[in-house]
Image (cartoon, rainbow, N blue to C red):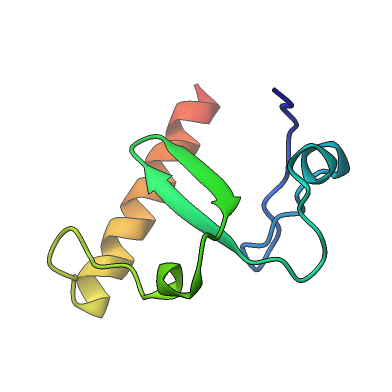
Length: 84
């Protein structure tokens, strides 16, 4: 197993480290699927066109003001936990 760190950039982009690309055979232009699983993010090779259907929400979407307030509260909580 190859494990490497990656940074999330301003627009939410990451670079898959060369060691991981080499170990998995991923090349420029390949499609991947990004899955959120509880407290981890999994990036894997796409198996076919059907995997590119938009994800279905697991909960009711929030209206914009509530979503913004929830994001700000979560961000503030993270900053408080790192300041202590």
